[in-house]
Image (cartoon, rainbow over all chains, first blue to last red; front, side, top):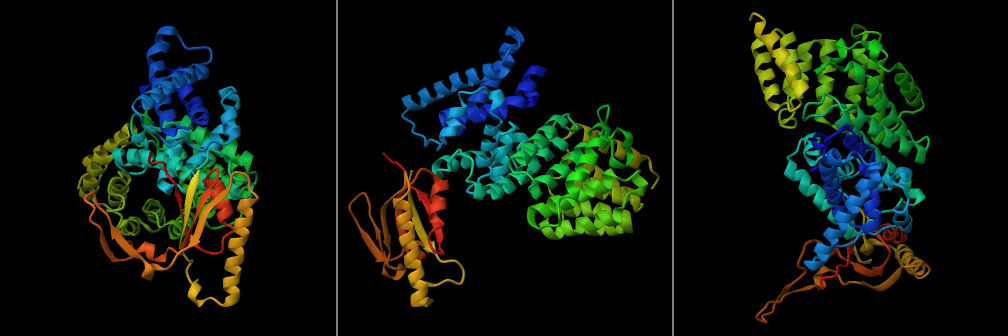
Length: 416
Length: 118
Protein backbone atom coordinates (compact mmCIF):
# COMPACT_ATOMS: atom_id res chain seq x y z
CA UNK A 1 0.00 0.00 0.00
CA UNK A 2 3.02 2.24 0.03
CA UNK A 3 2.68 5.21 -2.25
CA UNK A 4 3.87 8.79 -2.12
CA UNK A 5 0.43 9.91 -0.95
CA UNK A 6 0.69 7.94 2.28
CA UNK A 7 4.17 8.95 3.36
CA UNK A 8 4.68 11.10 6.40
CA UNK A 9 7.42 13.53 5.51
CA UNK A 10 9.67 14.72 2.72
CA UNK A 11 12.45 12.38 3.96
CA UNK A 12 10.20 9.40 3.48
CA UNK A 13 9.10 10.59 0.09
CA UNK A 14 12.71 11.09 -0.91
CA UNK A 15 13.65 7.63 0.40
CA UNK A 16 10.74 6.09 -1.47
CA UNK A 17 11.73 7.76 -4.72
CA UNK A 18 15.46 7.19 -4.41
CA UNK A 19 15.64 3.77 -2.85
CA UNK A 20 12.50 1.76 -3.59
CA UNK A 21 13.81 0.10 -6.77
CA UNK A 22 17.30 -0.41 -5.40
CA UNK A 23 15.98 -1.97 -2.21
CA UNK A 24 13.59 -4.27 -4.07
CA UNK A 25 16.50 -5.40 -6.23
CA UNK A 26 18.78 -6.01 -3.24
CA UNK A 27 16.06 -7.95 -1.39
CA UNK A 28 15.30 -10.08 -4.43
CA UNK A 29 19.00 -10.79 -4.88
CA UNK A 30 19.27 -11.95 -1.31
CA UNK A 31 16.01 -13.84 -0.77
CA UNK A 32 14.99 -14.88 -4.30
CA UNK A 33 11.33 -14.08 -3.59
CA UNK A 34 9.82 -11.24 -5.68
CA UNK A 35 6.46 -11.40 -3.94
CA UNK A 36 7.89 -11.18 -0.43
CA UNK A 37 10.52 -8.57 -1.33
CA UNK A 38 7.85 -6.13 -2.49
CA UNK A 39 5.50 -6.78 0.46
CA UNK A 40 8.29 -6.62 3.05
CA UNK A 41 9.60 -3.35 1.64
CA UNK A 42 6.09 -1.87 1.59
CA UNK A 43 5.78 -2.87 5.26
CA UNK A 44 9.14 -1.28 6.04
CA UNK A 45 7.93 2.00 4.53
CA UNK A 46 4.72 1.78 6.54
CA UNK A 47 6.80 1.22 9.67
CA UNK A 48 8.91 4.25 8.76
CA UNK A 49 5.81 6.46 8.55
CA UNK A 50 5.17 5.54 12.19
CA UNK A 51 8.76 5.52 13.54
CA UNK A 52 10.47 8.39 11.72
CA UNK A 53 8.19 11.17 13.02
CA UNK A 54 8.86 9.86 16.57
CA UNK A 55 12.52 8.72 16.41
CA UNK A 56 13.66 11.19 13.79
CA UNK A 57 14.91 10.44 10.29
CA UNK A 58 17.74 7.87 10.45
CA UNK A 59 21.20 8.93 9.22
CA UNK A 60 21.05 6.35 6.47
CA UNK A 61 17.39 5.94 5.50
CA UNK A 62 18.13 3.27 2.88
CA UNK A 63 20.00 1.12 5.39
CA UNK A 64 17.20 1.57 7.95
CA UNK A 65 14.58 0.52 5.40
CA UNK A 66 16.66 -2.42 4.28
CA UNK A 67 17.11 -3.69 7.82
CA UNK A 68 13.37 -3.32 8.53
CA UNK A 69 12.46 -5.02 5.25
CA UNK A 70 14.94 -7.87 5.85
CA UNK A 71 13.49 -8.50 9.30
CA UNK A 72 9.97 -8.52 7.92
CA UNK A 73 10.98 -10.82 5.09
CA UNK A 74 12.60 -13.30 7.48
CA UNK A 75 9.34 -13.33 9.48
CA UNK A 76 7.39 -14.00 6.31
CA UNK A 77 9.73 -16.86 5.34
CA UNK A 78 9.35 -18.35 8.81
CA UNK A 79 5.56 -18.13 8.54
CA UNK A 80 5.75 -19.84 5.14
CA UNK A 81 7.89 -22.63 6.62
CA UNK A 82 5.52 -23.11 9.59
CA UNK A 83 2.49 -23.26 7.31
CA UNK A 84 4.34 -25.70 5.07
CA UNK A 85 4.00 -23.40 2.08
CA UNK A 86 6.56 -24.06 -0.60
CA UNK A 87 7.31 -21.36 -3.12
CA UNK A 88 9.40 -21.55 -6.22
CA UNK A 89 12.61 -19.54 -5.68
CA UNK A 90 13.86 -17.13 -8.30
CA UNK A 91 17.00 -18.13 -10.16
CA UNK A 92 19.60 -15.55 -9.16
CA UNK A 93 22.92 -14.89 -10.85
CA UNK A 94 25.85 -15.13 -8.39
CA UNK A 95 26.78 -11.50 -9.12
CA UNK A 96 23.33 -10.28 -8.08
CA UNK A 97 23.37 -12.11 -4.76
CA UNK A 98 26.82 -10.63 -4.03
CA UNK A 99 25.49 -7.12 -4.59
CA UNK A 100 23.42 -7.45 -1.41
CA UNK A 101 26.62 -7.01 0.59
CA UNK A 102 27.30 -3.59 -0.91
CA UNK A 103 25.68 -0.31 0.08
CA UNK A 104 22.38 0.41 -1.74
CA UNK A 105 23.87 3.72 -2.83
CA UNK A 106 26.56 2.12 -4.97
CA UNK A 107 24.67 -0.64 -6.78
CA UNK A 108 22.81 1.20 -9.57
CA UNK A 109 23.24 -1.84 -11.84
CA UNK A 110 20.87 -3.82 -9.69
CA UNK A 111 18.03 -1.57 -10.79
CA UNK A 112 18.90 -2.29 -14.37
CA UNK A 113 18.90 -6.01 -13.68
CA UNK A 114 15.52 -5.55 -12.00
CA UNK A 115 14.16 -3.52 -14.91
CA UNK A 116 15.29 -6.10 -17.46
CA UNK A 117 13.82 -8.88 -15.32
CA UNK A 118 10.47 -7.06 -15.34
CA UNK A 119 10.75 -6.56 -19.10
CA UNK A 120 11.62 -10.17 -19.92
CA UNK A 121 9.95 -11.34 -23.18
CA UNK A 122 8.57 -14.45 -21.40
CA UNK A 123 6.20 -12.03 -19.61
CA UNK A 124 3.19 -10.50 -21.39
CA UNK A 125 3.76 -6.93 -22.59
CA UNK A 126 1.17 -5.29 -20.32
CA UNK A 127 2.44 -7.24 -17.34
CA UNK A 128 6.02 -6.14 -18.09
CA UNK A 129 5.14 -2.47 -17.82
CA UNK A 130 2.99 -2.93 -14.73
CA UNK A 131 5.74 -4.93 -13.07
CA UNK A 132 8.47 -2.40 -13.83
CA UNK A 133 6.33 0.49 -12.62
CA UNK A 134 5.55 -1.36 -9.41
CA UNK A 135 8.95 -2.94 -8.66
CA UNK A 136 11.42 -0.44 -10.09
CA UNK A 137 9.57 2.79 -9.36
CA UNK A 138 7.24 1.70 -6.55
CA UNK A 139 4.12 3.13 -8.19
CA UNK A 140 0.88 1.98 -6.55
CA UNK A 141 -1.32 -0.65 -8.16
CA UNK A 142 -4.18 1.89 -8.30
CA UNK A 143 -2.08 4.39 -10.23
CA UNK A 144 -0.84 1.70 -12.63
CA UNK A 145 -4.45 0.66 -13.20
CA UNK A 146 -5.31 4.25 -14.14
CA UNK A 147 -2.42 4.36 -16.58
CA UNK A 148 -3.67 1.27 -18.37
CA UNK A 149 -7.33 2.38 -18.15
CA UNK A 150 -8.08 -0.85 -16.26
CA UNK A 151 -9.58 -1.85 -12.91
CA UNK A 152 -7.29 -2.14 -9.84
CA UNK A 153 -8.13 -5.83 -9.40
CA UNK A 154 -7.14 -6.58 -12.99
CA UNK A 155 -3.70 -5.03 -12.51
CA UNK A 156 -3.29 -6.72 -9.11
CA UNK A 157 -4.00 -10.12 -10.64
CA UNK A 158 -1.70 -9.37 -13.56
CA UNK A 159 1.18 -8.49 -11.21
CA UNK A 160 0.70 -11.62 -9.12
CA UNK A 161 0.57 -13.81 -12.21
CA UNK A 162 3.69 -12.20 -13.68
CA UNK A 163 5.72 -12.68 -10.49
CA UNK A 164 4.65 -16.31 -10.29
CA UNK A 165 5.52 -16.84 -13.95
CA UNK A 166 9.01 -15.35 -13.54
CA UNK A 167 9.90 -17.68 -10.66
CA UNK A 168 8.08 -20.71 -12.08
CA UNK A 169 9.44 -20.45 -15.61
CA UNK A 170 13.00 -19.97 -14.36
CA UNK A 171 13.51 -16.44 -15.69
CA UNK A 172 16.83 -15.56 -14.04
CA UNK A 173 17.59 -12.37 -12.11
CA UNK A 174 20.57 -11.70 -14.35
CA UNK A 175 21.80 -9.39 -17.05
CA UNK A 176 21.05 -10.91 -20.48
CA UNK A 177 23.85 -12.29 -22.67
CA UNK A 178 25.45 -9.55 -24.85
CA UNK A 179 23.70 -10.64 -28.08
CA UNK A 180 20.31 -10.39 -26.38
CA UNK A 181 20.91 -7.05 -24.75
CA UNK A 182 19.62 -4.74 -27.51
CA UNK A 183 16.38 -6.65 -27.88
CA UNK A 184 15.83 -6.59 -24.15
CA UNK A 185 16.64 -2.90 -23.96
CA UNK A 186 14.03 -2.14 -26.64
CA UNK A 187 11.40 -3.80 -24.48
CA UNK A 188 12.57 -1.77 -21.50
CA UNK A 189 12.39 1.44 -23.57
CA UNK A 190 8.64 1.03 -24.00
CA UNK A 191 8.25 0.40 -20.30
CA UNK A 192 10.29 3.43 -19.29
CA UNK A 193 8.16 5.61 -21.53
CA UNK A 194 5.02 4.38 -19.78
CA UNK A 195 6.65 5.21 -16.46
CA UNK A 196 7.46 8.69 -17.72
CA UNK A 197 3.85 9.20 -18.77
CA UNK A 198 2.73 8.39 -15.21
CA UNK A 199 4.86 11.25 -13.94
CA UNK A 200 4.07 13.64 -16.75
CA UNK A 201 0.29 13.36 -16.55
CA UNK A 202 -0.89 11.73 -13.32
CA UNK A 203 -4.50 10.73 -13.73
CA UNK A 204 -5.27 10.44 -10.05
CA UNK A 205 -4.97 12.69 -7.02
CA UNK A 206 -4.04 16.30 -6.44
CA UNK A 207 -0.80 16.57 -8.43
CA UNK A 208 -0.85 18.00 -11.89
CA UNK A 209 2.47 16.52 -12.70
CA UNK A 210 5.06 14.68 -10.69
CA UNK A 211 8.20 16.15 -12.15
CA UNK A 212 10.28 13.94 -9.84
CA UNK A 213 8.73 10.78 -11.16
CA UNK A 214 9.16 11.95 -14.75
CA UNK A 215 12.73 12.81 -13.83
CA UNK A 216 13.23 9.31 -12.43
CA UNK A 217 12.03 7.78 -15.69
CA UNK A 218 14.54 10.00 -17.49
CA UNK A 219 17.24 8.72 -15.15
CA UNK A 220 16.26 5.13 -15.94
CA UNK A 221 16.58 5.97 -19.63
CA UNK A 222 20.01 7.50 -18.96
CA UNK A 223 21.14 4.28 -17.26
CA UNK A 224 20.01 2.40 -20.37
CA UNK A 225 21.85 4.92 -22.54
CA UNK A 226 25.01 4.35 -20.53
CA UNK A 227 24.77 0.59 -20.80
CA UNK A 228 24.00 0.51 -24.53
CA UNK A 229 25.49 3.71 -25.95
CA UNK A 230 24.21 5.15 -29.25
CA UNK A 231 21.17 2.88 -29.25
CA UNK A 232 18.57 4.67 -31.42
CA UNK A 233 15.40 3.79 -29.45
CA UNK A 234 16.95 4.88 -26.15
CA UNK A 235 18.14 8.14 -27.74
CA UNK A 236 14.71 8.83 -29.29
CA UNK A 237 13.04 8.08 -25.98
CA UNK A 238 15.39 10.38 -24.08
CA UNK A 239 14.84 13.18 -26.61
CA UNK A 240 11.06 12.81 -26.38
CA UNK A 241 11.06 12.81 -22.60
CA UNK A 242 13.42 15.79 -22.38
CA UNK A 243 11.27 17.87 -24.78
CA UNK A 244 8.19 17.18 -22.67
CA UNK A 245 9.89 17.45 -19.31
CA UNK A 246 11.44 20.81 -20.31
CA UNK A 247 7.96 22.35 -20.13
CA UNK A 248 7.26 21.23 -16.54
CA UNK A 249 7.54 24.66 -14.83
CA UNK A 250 5.25 26.36 -17.33
CA UNK A 251 2.59 23.63 -17.27
CA UNK A 252 1.36 24.58 -13.82
CA UNK A 253 0.34 27.96 -12.37
CA UNK A 254 -0.39 27.64 -8.66
CA UNK A 255 -2.47 24.47 -8.58
CA UNK A 256 -3.79 24.94 -12.07
CA UNK A 257 -3.12 23.43 -15.43
CA UNK A 258 -1.77 25.75 -18.13
CA UNK A 259 -2.50 24.61 -21.67
CA UNK A 260 0.38 24.47 -24.12
CA UNK A 261 -0.91 27.50 -26.02
CA UNK A 262 -1.03 29.63 -22.84
CA UNK A 263 2.33 28.60 -21.38
CA UNK A 264 5.04 31.17 -20.75
CA UNK A 265 7.67 29.84 -23.14
CA UNK A 266 10.44 31.72 -21.34
CA UNK A 267 9.94 29.31 -18.44
CA UNK A 268 10.70 26.27 -20.55
CA UNK A 269 14.11 24.72 -19.91
CA UNK A 270 15.75 25.70 -23.17
CA UNK A 271 19.02 23.97 -22.29
CA UNK A 272 17.15 20.67 -22.05
CA UNK A 273 15.33 21.39 -25.32
CA UNK A 274 18.71 21.99 -26.99
CA UNK A 275 20.01 18.71 -25.57
CA UNK A 276 16.92 16.87 -26.82
CA UNK A 277 17.37 18.36 -30.32
CA UNK A 278 20.96 17.12 -30.36
CA UNK A 279 19.85 13.60 -29.40
CA UNK A 280 17.00 13.52 -31.91
CA UNK A 281 19.12 14.81 -34.81
CA UNK A 282 21.29 11.69 -34.46
CA UNK A 283 18.35 9.27 -34.70
CA UNK A 284 17.74 8.20 -38.33
CA UNK A 285 14.29 7.19 -39.63
CA UNK A 286 13.59 3.65 -38.48
CA UNK A 287 10.65 1.34 -37.89
CA UNK A 288 8.89 -0.20 -34.92
CA UNK A 289 9.41 1.26 -31.48
CA UNK A 290 12.21 3.57 -32.60
CA UNK A 291 10.07 5.19 -35.28
CA UNK A 292 7.15 5.58 -32.86
CA UNK A 293 9.38 7.39 -30.41
CA UNK A 294 11.11 9.41 -33.15
CA UNK A 295 7.77 10.66 -34.55
CA UNK A 296 6.55 11.62 -31.09
CA UNK A 297 9.84 13.38 -30.37
CA UNK A 298 9.54 15.27 -33.70
CA UNK A 299 6.06 16.43 -32.70
CA UNK A 300 7.36 17.53 -29.29
CA UNK A 301 10.25 19.33 -31.04
CA UNK A 302 7.85 21.29 -33.28
CA UNK A 303 6.02 22.49 -30.17
CA UNK A 304 9.20 23.15 -28.21
CA UNK A 305 10.85 25.23 -30.95
CA UNK A 306 7.84 27.29 -32.01
CA UNK A 307 8.34 30.93 -30.88
CA UNK A 308 4.66 31.18 -29.91
CA UNK A 309 1.45 29.14 -30.09
CA UNK A 310 0.18 30.92 -33.22
CA UNK A 311 3.34 30.00 -35.14
CA UNK A 312 2.96 26.25 -34.44
CA UNK A 313 3.46 24.14 -37.55
CA UNK A 314 0.22 22.16 -37.21
CA UNK A 315 0.43 20.81 -40.77
CA UNK A 316 3.68 18.97 -39.99
CA UNK A 317 2.33 17.87 -36.62
CA UNK A 318 -0.83 16.43 -38.22
CA UNK A 319 1.38 14.63 -40.75
CA UNK A 320 3.53 13.07 -38.03
CA UNK A 321 0.41 11.97 -36.14
CA UNK A 322 -1.00 10.37 -39.30
CA UNK A 323 2.18 8.27 -39.68
CA UNK A 324 2.12 7.47 -35.99
CA UNK A 325 -1.48 6.28 -36.23
CA UNK A 326 -0.63 4.01 -39.17
CA UNK A 327 2.24 2.60 -37.13
CA UNK A 328 0.41 2.07 -33.83
CA UNK A 329 -3.33 2.01 -34.51
CA UNK A 330 -3.64 3.68 -31.12
CA UNK A 331 -6.92 5.47 -30.28
CA UNK A 332 -4.98 7.98 -28.14
CA UNK A 333 -2.82 8.88 -31.15
CA UNK A 334 -5.99 9.36 -33.21
CA UNK A 335 -7.36 11.68 -30.54
CA UNK A 336 -4.21 13.82 -30.72
CA UNK A 337 -4.27 13.70 -34.49
CA UNK A 338 -7.86 15.00 -34.43
CA UNK A 339 -6.70 18.04 -32.43
CA UNK A 340 -3.94 18.78 -34.96
CA UNK A 341 -6.29 18.26 -37.92
CA UNK A 342 -8.79 20.66 -36.34
CA UNK A 343 -6.05 23.30 -36.15
CA UNK A 344 -5.27 22.85 -39.84
CA UNK A 345 -8.70 22.22 -41.37
CA UNK A 346 -11.22 23.40 -38.78
CA UNK A 347 -13.31 21.80 -36.00
CA UNK A 348 -15.59 19.76 -38.29
CA UNK A 349 -12.60 17.83 -39.70
CA UNK A 350 -11.35 17.21 -36.17
CA UNK A 351 -14.74 16.02 -34.94
CA UNK A 352 -15.02 13.61 -37.86
CA UNK A 353 -11.74 12.00 -36.76
CA UNK A 354 -13.17 11.31 -33.31
CA UNK A 355 -15.86 9.01 -34.72
CA UNK A 356 -15.42 5.45 -33.55
CA UNK A 357 -13.25 6.21 -30.50
CA UNK A 358 -16.10 5.96 -27.97
CA UNK A 359 -15.56 2.30 -27.14
CA UNK A 360 -11.75 2.30 -27.16
CA UNK A 361 -11.58 5.39 -24.93
CA UNK A 362 -14.66 4.65 -22.82
CA UNK A 363 -12.89 5.57 -19.57
CA UNK A 364 -10.77 8.48 -20.74
CA UNK A 365 -11.88 12.03 -19.90
CA UNK A 366 -9.78 13.42 -22.74
CA UNK A 367 -12.16 12.22 -25.48
CA UNK A 368 -15.20 14.23 -24.24
CA UNK A 369 -12.87 17.12 -23.28
CA UNK A 370 -11.47 17.36 -26.81
CA UNK A 371 -14.90 16.88 -28.33
CA UNK A 372 -16.23 19.72 -26.15
CA UNK A 373 -13.52 22.13 -27.33
CA UNK A 374 -14.12 21.27 -30.98
CA UNK A 375 -17.92 21.56 -30.61
CA UNK A 376 -17.43 24.92 -28.94
CA UNK A 377 -15.34 26.14 -31.85
CA UNK A 378 -18.02 24.85 -34.22
CA UNK A 379 -20.60 26.94 -32.29
CA UNK A 380 -22.45 24.03 -30.65
CA UNK A 381 -22.51 25.18 -26.99
CA UNK A 382 -25.20 22.66 -25.98
CA UNK A 383 -23.08 19.79 -27.25
CA UNK A 384 -19.93 21.26 -25.67
CA UNK A 385 -21.70 21.50 -22.31
CA UNK A 386 -22.83 17.89 -22.48
CA UNK A 387 -19.31 16.67 -23.32
CA UNK A 388 -17.71 18.77 -20.57
CA UNK A 389 -20.06 17.30 -17.96
CA UNK A 390 -19.11 13.84 -19.20
CA UNK A 391 -15.39 14.70 -19.02
CA UNK A 392 -15.71 16.07 -15.46
CA UNK A 393 -17.45 12.87 -14.40
CA UNK A 394 -14.61 10.72 -15.78
CA UNK A 395 -11.63 12.87 -14.76
CA UNK A 396 -9.74 11.69 -11.66
CA UNK A 397 -7.04 14.38 -11.58
CA UNK A 398 -8.09 17.31 -9.37
CA UNK A 399 -6.31 20.06 -11.31
CA UNK A 400 -7.57 18.86 -14.67
CA UNK A 401 -11.09 18.64 -13.28
CA UNK A 402 -10.89 22.25 -12.07
CA UNK A 403 -9.80 23.26 -15.54
CA UNK A 404 -12.80 21.43 -17.02
CA UNK A 405 -15.10 23.19 -14.54
CA UNK A 406 -13.75 26.57 -15.64
CA UNK A 407 -14.39 25.67 -19.26
CA UNK A 408 -17.92 24.62 -18.28
CA UNK A 409 -18.51 28.01 -16.62
CA UNK A 410 -17.39 29.79 -19.79
CA UNK A 411 -19.56 27.58 -22.00
CA UNK A 412 -22.57 28.04 -19.71
CA UNK A 413 -22.15 31.83 -19.88
CA UNK A 414 -22.04 31.75 -23.68
CA UNK A 415 -25.42 32.70 -25.23
CA UNK A 416 -26.83 29.96 -27.41
CA UNK B 1 15.93 -26.35 -13.05
CA UNK B 2 14.37 -29.21 -14.94
CA UNK B 3 12.34 -28.55 -18.08
CA UNK B 4 10.42 -30.58 -20.61
CA UNK B 5 10.91 -29.07 -24.04
CA UNK B 6 7.92 -30.04 -26.12
CA UNK B 7 8.38 -29.98 -29.85
CA UNK B 8 4.96 -28.50 -30.50
CA UNK B 9 5.16 -27.97 -34.23
CA UNK B 10 6.97 -26.62 -37.24
CA UNK B 11 7.10 -23.00 -38.32
CA UNK B 12 4.73 -21.92 -41.09
CA UNK B 13 5.56 -23.63 -44.37
CA UNK B 14 7.76 -26.36 -42.85
CA UNK B 15 6.49 -29.95 -42.87
CA UNK B 16 8.51 -33.06 -42.05
CA UNK B 17 6.48 -35.19 -44.46
CA UNK B 18 7.30 -32.85 -47.36
CA UNK B 19 11.04 -32.71 -46.65
CA UNK B 20 13.72 -34.12 -48.91
CA UNK B 21 16.20 -36.62 -47.48
CA UNK B 22 18.82 -33.85 -47.35
CA UNK B 23 16.50 -31.52 -45.40
CA UNK B 24 15.77 -34.30 -42.96
CA UNK B 25 19.48 -34.95 -42.53
CA UNK B 26 19.91 -31.25 -41.59
CA UNK B 27 17.29 -31.74 -38.87
CA UNK B 28 19.01 -34.84 -37.54
CA UNK B 29 22.41 -33.13 -37.60
CA UNK B 30 21.07 -30.19 -35.63
CA UNK B 31 19.71 -32.54 -32.97
CA UNK B 32 23.16 -34.13 -32.78
CA UNK B 33 24.77 -30.68 -32.41
CA UNK B 34 22.25 -29.88 -29.69
CA UNK B 35 23.20 -33.07 -27.81
CA UNK B 36 26.92 -32.28 -28.19
CA UNK B 37 26.43 -28.74 -26.88
CA UNK B 38 24.49 -29.99 -23.86
CA UNK B 39 27.22 -32.52 -23.08
CA UNK B 40 29.91 -29.87 -23.21
CA UNK B 41 28.15 -27.35 -21.04
CA UNK B 42 28.32 -27.05 -17.26
CA UNK B 43 25.01 -27.47 -15.48
CA UNK B 44 23.26 -28.73 -18.61
CA UNK B 45 22.17 -32.32 -19.06
CA UNK B 46 19.75 -34.19 -21.30
CA UNK B 47 17.83 -36.55 -18.99
CA UNK B 48 15.65 -37.95 -21.75
CA UNK B 49 14.60 -37.16 -25.27
CA UNK B 50 12.40 -39.01 -27.73
CA UNK B 51 10.51 -38.49 -30.93
CA UNK B 52 6.83 -39.34 -30.61
CA UNK B 53 4.35 -41.04 -32.89
CA UNK B 54 1.83 -38.58 -34.30
CA UNK B 55 -1.69 -37.91 -32.97
CA UNK B 56 -3.25 -40.68 -35.06
CA UNK B 57 -1.34 -43.19 -32.91
CA UNK B 58 -2.42 -41.65 -29.61
CA UNK B 59 -4.82 -43.30 -27.21
CA UNK B 60 -6.60 -41.35 -24.49
CA UNK B 61 -7.08 -42.96 -21.13
CA UNK B 62 -9.23 -41.53 -18.31
CA UNK B 63 -8.41 -42.96 -14.91
CA UNK B 64 -10.45 -42.47 -11.75
CA UNK B 65 -10.62 -42.97 -8.00
CA UNK B 66 -12.77 -46.11 -8.23
CA UNK B 67 -10.43 -47.87 -10.62
CA UNK B 68 -12.57 -47.40 -13.70
CA UNK B 69 -10.53 -46.79 -16.79
CA UNK B 70 -12.08 -45.39 -19.94
CA UNK B 71 -10.23 -45.63 -23.20
CA UNK B 72 -10.98 -43.54 -26.27
CA UNK B 73 -9.27 -42.69 -29.49
CA UNK B 74 -6.72 -39.92 -28.92
CA UNK B 75 -5.16 -37.51 -28.78
CA UNK B 76 -6.91 -35.68 -25.94
CA UNK B 77 -6.07 -32.09 -26.80
CA UNK B 78 -6.06 -30.53 -30.22
CA UNK B 79 -2.54 -29.19 -29.66
CA UNK B 80 -1.22 -32.59 -28.60
CA UNK B 81 -1.78 -33.80 -32.14
CA UNK B 82 1.26 -31.85 -33.24
CA UNK B 83 3.68 -32.75 -30.47
CA UNK B 84 6.42 -34.54 -32.31
CA UNK B 85 8.88 -35.16 -29.51
CA UNK B 86 10.36 -33.94 -26.28
CA UNK B 87 13.50 -33.46 -24.28
CA UNK B 88 13.78 -33.63 -20.52
CA UNK B 89 16.62 -31.26 -19.66
CA UNK B 90 18.46 -30.06 -16.61
CA UNK B 91 19.61 -26.43 -17.05
CA UNK B 92 20.37 -23.48 -14.73
CA UNK B 93 17.59 -21.20 -16.00
CA UNK B 94 15.30 -20.15 -18.86
CA UNK B 95 18.02 -18.01 -20.42
CA UNK B 96 20.43 -20.93 -20.82
CA UNK B 97 17.59 -23.15 -22.00
CA UNK B 98 16.70 -20.60 -24.68
CA UNK B 99 20.31 -20.39 -25.77
CA UNK B 100 20.82 -24.13 -26.20
CA UNK B 101 17.40 -24.65 -27.81
CA UNK B 102 18.37 -22.14 -30.50
CA UNK B 103 20.70 -24.87 -31.81
CA UNK B 104 17.72 -27.07 -32.67
CA UNK B 105 16.32 -26.95 -36.23
CA UNK B 106 13.22 -24.79 -36.93
CA UNK B 107 10.38 -25.75 -34.56
CA UNK B 108 7.80 -24.21 -32.32
CA UNK B 109 8.84 -25.26 -28.83
CA UNK B 110 6.94 -25.18 -25.58
CA UNK B 111 9.27 -24.86 -22.61
CA UNK B 112 7.63 -26.34 -19.53
CA UNK B 113 9.33 -26.25 -16.14
CA UNK B 114 9.12 -29.52 -14.23
CA UNK B 115 7.55 -28.84 -10.84
CA UNK B 116 7.92 -30.58 -7.51
CA UNK B 117 4.47 -31.71 -6.37
CA UNK B 118 5.72 -33.47 -3.23
